[in-house]
Image (cartoon, rainbow, N blue to C red; front, side):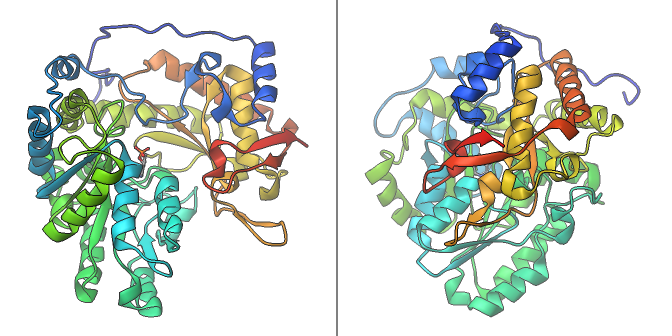
Length: 458
Ligand SMILES: *Cc1c(COP(=O)(O)O)cnc(C)c1O
């Protein structure tokens, strides 16, 4: 039905009221939280696009599954349903539940990575980078050059630069590369997909050097849909067939079930190597829980098991990817600079292009995120020099390659009119761009500073 509106493939079953703080309240809230929208109370936000992580609406079937959760400490029925689902979708044999994606990352890197190692990725997500660096290793981003150019139109801007990967392995030596990781879709790089051909090429390099390849699989279903839409030879394949092919090219994966697990919490670490899995489970017991629950309730495991299948439904994916594209088209038509083409789960505003008068040292994307909140109570997140700038001993910083504000769309949560409103707010802020001022960072913690750093306007 190409000429009909692509509608939400669900009806609303339970509603949650939204608060409407006025502009004075929003201004006061911004001051109170030191111009960091992570500090806002959710009730102070009108449309919350901070993240698509764990913020989606669950289905009637997921809630029904929750009622069937088996809370046995060991060997719960819900664990086996979860394990079998993950194994059926990924083909990976060792399935380790974790409370969310970063727990899977922490365990994987603690077991595989040593100080001085280098971990290549297309673009590390913030928690992935922090977990690599916490081991004293280097997290190296090797996305293709088009992936760093917001205006470049490329069907798979999340692809890894295979020559750069080869060069990195040559430079540091195979022994210092414990694993290669590919993030699908490339969240920090604009939610851009990775092609099957690229995954296959990365696999070949890894095989040649005997290096394991892991997928950061958080949005594996969205990535599969992009492959279906854009990669020759995949148009007639189903999302599950494409997902299985993606997973067949890797030795393991980390997963946040708060994304394409369609759940409010959960994650897993999966792999084929039983020895490595045993080491991971030993650490899991120390910090997360017994291997048949991994820090989750039995009912969470049920919600994830059901959610993983729902993420692969064609009607859902068609709506999901189209609704993000719809917001992108609306603001791009008004001349607002965004990362093109739009990613699967989010629209990324290009703050460098919109606010050329604010240098990276004054955090243009942070200023833009604050302006969106002030204008219309819309909360997005900075993905720029606050998140990825590198402080130097002399007090200066190496800026991030891009200054973006991500507006992530929670799954099955907002309707088209909510999204129309968001578009209006974005356009209104863009019209006032010349009046926006930069920020000065007042305080920051040692890790993941974007969550809690505070600022003042310049
Ligand atoms: C969300 C996310 C993670 C971390 O998952 P959490 O469940 O938030 O800990 C890792 N990688 C990517 C690409 C993500 O989007």
